Length: 139
Image 1 (spheres, rainbow, N blue to C red):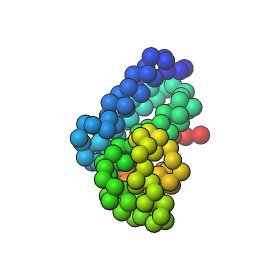
Image 2: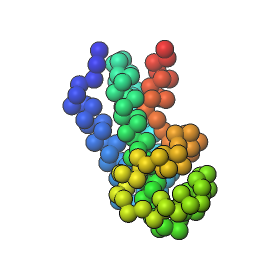
Image 3: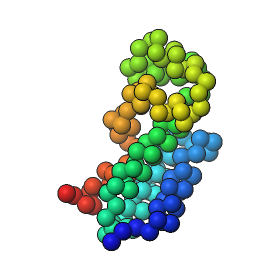
Image 4: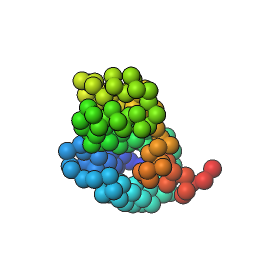
C-alpha cells in the first residue's frame, strides 16, 4: 500500500505553509503546529509504506526550519553572536553573518548546517517525520 502522489504534494504544501518565513510566529507556536500536522498525517497514513518519502521530506523540512531560524536572527550582530554560541569560529561566524546570499542558499551552507545541526534541532524539540514514522513502523 502506498500514498497517492497528490497527497504527498498536499503534505509538502502544508509543511511549506507552516514554515513560511513571513508568518510572524514564534518558535513554540511553529513547533506546535508542525507537531500536530506531522502526527495527524502519519497517523492517517500509518498503514502505507513510505519510508523513502518520509526521509526525503524530513530532510527538506529541516532545511525549511533552519531557514526560519536564520530569518529570525535577522541582524548581522544577532547572527554573529548566535553562530558563535553554536560553536562556529569567530572569523567564520563573522563571514557568514555578513553574507548576502539568500535564505535558502545560506541554509545549505556547511557553516549553518553545522551550527543548526539535526541534533540541535532535536534538542530544541522540533518534530521530525522520520522519528514519528519509526514509532509506528519499527524495523
